Length: 70
Image (cartoon, rainbow, N blue to C red; front, side):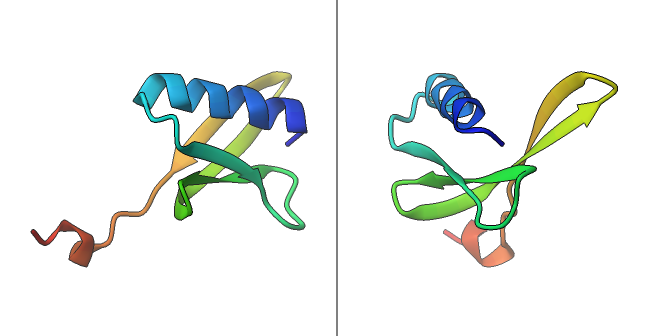
């Protein structure tokens, strides 16, 4: 992903989730995805999907069983 895409995605996520601490960071040695953080906590990966000239982004976040315990 380009730096411009990363900044646009970060702005979108901050607005969508109303979380100013969301950061989208470039992944080392990966050009088709970026990492998503809230503060310093890694929460998921954004993937770029380019299909016949149409670009879409998918956010993947794993929620572990022990994270659900109250």
